[in-house]
Amino acid sequence: MGDESEAVTAVRHGGPAAFGELVDEYRHELRVHCYRMLGSYTDADDMVQETMMRAWRRRETFEGRSTLRAWLYRIATNACLDLLSGPARSREIPVDVTVDVTVDVTVDVNGAARSPFAEVPWLQPYPDRLLDLAAPGEGRPEAAAVERETIELAYLAAIQHLPPRQRAVLILRDVAGWSAEETSQALELSVAAVKSALQRARATLRMHLPARRSQWGPATEPSEEERAVLRRYMEASVAGDLSALAALLREDARQTMPPASQVFDGRTAILDMWRPVMIGAQAWGEWKALPTSANRQPAVANYVRRPGHDRYTAVNIDVLRVEDGLIAEITTFGPELHAAFGLPAEL
Image (tube, rainbow, N blue to C red; front, side, top):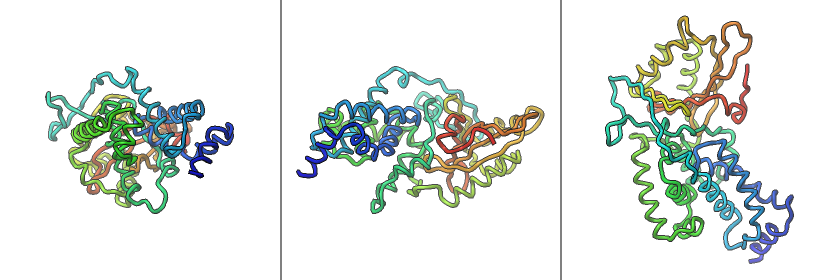
């Protein structure tokens, strides 16, 4: 009780500077939590700021019956739910699919091609260098193993298809490890409603995750095999070597480009999209690539020097999902988050 009383006193009466020092300890992990809820790094960053402001305004509500961390998670979760209550995230997203007819395409019950990535145009990558700041402490290997599985882009895209409260329940129960009772208090739901929501969320999630999801390893950072594939991918891209790129792609590989709701399904479809920008009269120019990592996956930042220009300009970031030494998925993002990755806008 003594420790709880001291915590309550510090939060309620410590003043802005002392309060900021207390809550800043949780800033990085709160941003990751909001990112899981929202799928957008930019929105998550905004919601952390909103969480801190709400926490300061509501500091009198902290009674010490839960930890400061749990209190902040509750505020952050509800801030995200408030954002998700708007119409922007609930609309149907038309998806333009270019298909390699030699491979099977994931379809929904109506026979339409599906891609959780392309249907989530707000999806953004999360820099590993910032994930490291929120990584679990030593002595928690089970939490470290879960971290990659629930931060990879395929998982992030899939959970965006859950209704917001189901998503919150899933994250608090399966990721944060909260009990049903703790989750019910945070979301102001009954325990029975929490259990029901979790069951439905898990069933829906399985429909949107890749078929080979269970085969993914629990490593917390890209493996040496993944790094080797990344190096070969960078070398082939810079050289414009489509044969080498083809050798790196699974036959059923897929490329998506949030926020453009486009899908390139199959090796041939991907190569046909790359060909005009890499070789020939319409090629964009000379390419350079810098290795990085996002969402615990290998990634590359691509730059191009256009004809007549002296400098290379940032074009995009490719995040790779590697299976059995081959690229199974490429998710391509614009250069908006280069600064968050610690990458220059020009070379």
